[in-house]
Image 1 (cartoon, rainbow over the protein chains, first blue to last red):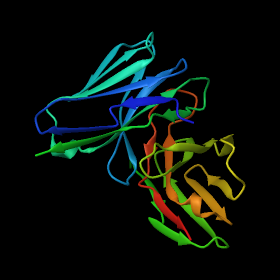
Image 2 (image 1 turned 180 degrees about the horizontal axis):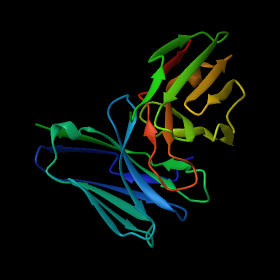
Image 3 (image 1 turned 30 degrees about the vertical axis):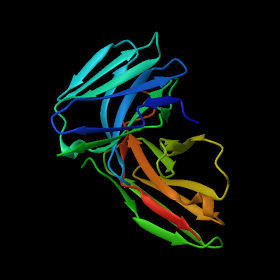
Length: 112
Length: 114
C-alpha cells in the first residue's frame, strides 16, 4: 500500500526552469528518500533525508522535509532535457528492514 | 562494481509455465529485495532478504517463490501465474536492512503472462 501522495502527478517545463515536486506521507518516518526512474527502467537513488534534518542539497537537487506537516519537496534547479523521468519519494518507518513505501510519483517532462 | 543485474530483460510466459527471474549484485550488500511495478504505478515491495534469510513477505501469493542461494544472488520462481501478474519486476540491494541507506535497483524484468 502507498504511504503517501505526490503532486503534481505530471509536470511539464522548459529547459532551464526549476521543477518542484511535493510528497506527503501518513505515518511517522525514520527517513525519506527520493528516486528517479527513466521510462520502464530501474530506479536511481537521488537523496536521503533523515527525520531530524530539514534540508539537504546534492548538486542541482534540494530536498526539504517538514515532519510536522508530514511532507517533503524536491527542487531541481536549471532543469535539463535529461531530467525527464518519473520521480518517487519513498519513506522508511524505521524499526529495521529498510522497508520503503513509495509515493505515487511525479512524471516530469523537460522540453528543450 | 555498483551494479545490480537482472535476467532476463523480458519474459513472456503462459499460465501453466514455470520460469525464474534472476538478480545478482557484487557490492557485498546483505539485504536484497523484490518489487513489483505496474504501469504508471510506484514499485510495491514483495520480499526482503537479509543475510540470505527471508525477513519480509508482503503477503505475496505462493505462485511467487523467492530464493536466495547466496549473498550475491536472488531468484524469483514463478509458477501458475495470472495475466494480472504482468508487470516490471525490480530487484534491489542495500548494504543491510538495519540502517537507513539507499537501495540500488536493477533494470528490471518485464514480465508478460498470457
